[in-house]
Image (cartoon, rainbow, N blue to C red; front, side, top):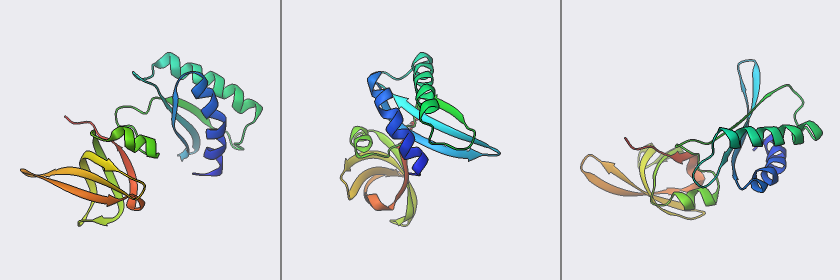
Length: 155
């Protein structure tokens, strides 16, 4: 996490939680010539446009008072979508039994990408069941090797 995202997270979390929602993620990224502050929110049953506009307005007000960002940027408040990122312990725990996609820094069992059902999660290790042709295999992945993890939509 960069210093900017940490500061924005500290500012946004109480605002989002007061509205009965969860702060999923904060990203501060440059795309082309523009900077974007992306804030993902969620709640039971999902968020709608009204929720995003409400949080955008309240967060904009807070950022105008105590802005930790020097350069001009666009604020984007949105739902994490169906392929929600898994970053915190709680995210992984909620995803147990669900279909996930995991990418690792280093190969695990000669692969760096895995898609399947998340079976277990601990601070050190997670277990995922993947399908290889007609067989199901259980693969243990060290948490410190995870580059990216998210829920995955099955078609």
